[in-house]
Structures are given as structure tokens and as C-alpha cells.
Length: 377
Figure 1: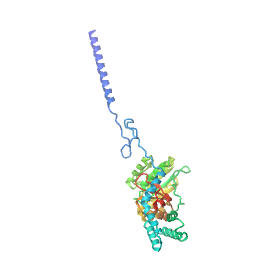
Figure 2: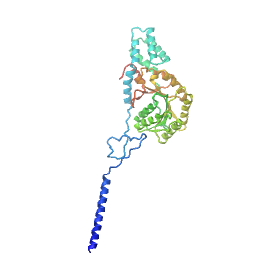
Figure 3: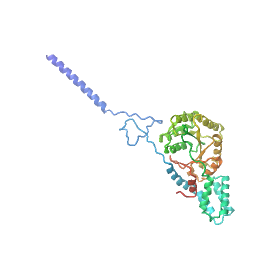
Figure 4: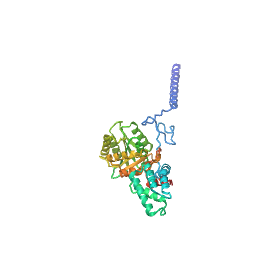
């Protein structure tokens, strides 16, 4: 009996020891901090967590916060303000000359020089001067305030009847497709990203095509622009065929039934015939799936008449339908708007007014003329 009792106590002791050991292991495991895996992203960094949701609340998960682009109305308010500050000198100079007690031939020459210095162009300048001469001779200065006369003639020069709407709407079951072209340094890729924001603000679904495959940072830059507003970008390996990337972007747009596909193309030097031919190839390949509804030429407003050369060559290569003038706030030569429209016979549709994400606005001729005349409101 004694031996049996000893064995019984020994077994019970071993069982208690085992249970204690297991309890310790469980406690240790429960106290061990959980490992949080970083969210995957293109640059290896986790996107910022959604406001109000911390890492402790959702371990291992962070959701990027999408930006809300500004509306067209808000952009137009800033358009008035910035154009007035950068372009008002031209209008004030013209008004000062036209308000002289005696307008002689020397005054008209000064008016011509003022317009030419603002890059209005020779033909438009001569047309405006002739119309002003006629009105002042027939109507006299008492018929209407000089500001009103100048406003009417400047507005006529810009041709407010031109269609400045963006044709990038879904139609017949296919997305609108816009090719964005221009030489390096005009802000082309940035313009594509900003244009995506304009369309997102209008509640349109967009796909971006990073067909500038020769500039290393272009695809990454465009992808980042898209991620900020929840727009996907189709890209290929560096140096790949731009036409194939553009084709794939439109294919994705068709499959996802989006409203618009915006294709960024490589910056073309206007004297490189082969590259211009390649741009034509991009268009032909894209149109195997969906018509190209817009070809937007991005021009730097500060380049002046050099931009005219670029405009003509691009127009011959891909049939430009609209112009985007960047850096207009940084140039006092606002007459380039008139000159480039006359050169191509197509309207300025968008203008860039700064470095901000929403500093791309629809071009409004009346707002522009009022800004020339120093009227910001």
C-alpha cells in the first residue's frame, strides 16, 4: 500500500509540473507582441493609414487616403486672381495708350509694339489694330468707354465661339481617349496627372497610360499622380514600345468601362522625324480599340514664339484638337494664347497657373480678357 501511495503522489506531482509548464508557455505566447507586416507598395513604403484608423486597431493594414480634387468653379476663381496679377500689365498698357488725348501714328506704333512684345503675333496684332482704328474713326471715343471697346475686340480676337470642352466622355460603350503630346520640359506628364484630377472632380472614372517609356521617372511620376486620387496607371518596362503600353491602357479602360483614358507620350523633339512618326504609330495602334477623341498639345507659355514652331509640327503629325498652356502665371506674354490658336486653328482648352496639384483650369476667354484689363472679380 505504501508503494502504491508513493507512486500515486509521484504521478500527481509530475502532472502538476507539466500543467504549470504549459500554463507558462501559454502566458508567454499571449504576451508576445504580434508582428505587423508592412503593406506592399511600389516604393517599398506603406501608404499612410486612413484618418481615425490606427495600427493598433487594424494590425498590418493601412489604407491610403485619397485626395479630393478641387471643382472647376474653385479653379476659375484662382484663374481670375492669378491671371490678373501676371497678365494685367498688357491690358493696362493698351488702355493707357488708347486713352491719350490724341492718338496719332506714333501711338498706333506703340500699340503694335506692345502687342508684339506680348507674343500676340504679327497677323493678329495687325487685325486688332485695324479693328480698333475703324471703331475709333466710326464711333469715336464717346460712343463707349475705351475699356469696353478694347474688351470686345480682345474677346473677338480669342474667338469665344470655339469649342473648348474636353471630349473625353464615354460614348457607344467605349471610353474617351486623350493623347497628351509635347516636347520635354513643358510639364506634359504633370499635366496628365492634373487632368486626371480635373476629371475625377467631375466624378469620372479614369485610367492613365504611361507611354513615355524613355524617361525613367515618367511612369513612376504618373503612377503617383494617379494613386493620389484613386486612378490606376498602366505602365511597361523602361524602354518598351510606347504603342504597346498605350494599347494596353486603352484595353484596360475598355474592360473596366471607364469614362476616359489619358495617355502620356514621350517628349518629342520637333526635329526628330522618326519620333514624330512613332507618335503617329501610337495613335494608329490605340484606334484599333477605341477612337482617339482628343489630342492635347502641351506648350510652355514662357517659350513664346518657339512654341509656335512646336505647335505646327505636332499638328501635322497627330492632328491636335486642343492646347494646354502651362506656366501662364509665370509669363507676362499672354498673347501667346491668341498666336497659338491662330497657328493651329484649334482652341486653348486648359491653362496651368502654378505648381499646385489643382492649378490646371479650363480656359475661359472672358475671364482671360478681364484679367488682361486688370479686372480680377
